[in-house]
Image (cartoon, rainbow, N blue to C red):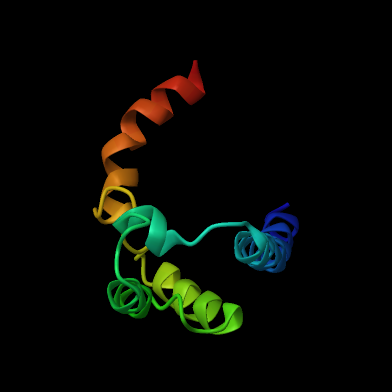
Length: 104
């Protein structure tokens, strides 16, 4: 039984990698520019470029994915574009309520 559980957990790793990469791929095909959404459409191109550099959005999708996953492995989910807060802290703030709703 323990061997079965261990094997299932190991098989979950490639699935998680595949799903996260698929989400990154779909994100790259969505229309719109995150820099324009955050800074506004009237922001100067230099400001948008600097914002994209800050969040590594000028890198290729594979480089973005590797940087993101290296942070996730360390427990860092990055910073929210919308709220400019640490995503890990936002998840931890909402965890108790989510857990209570899930078990009911």
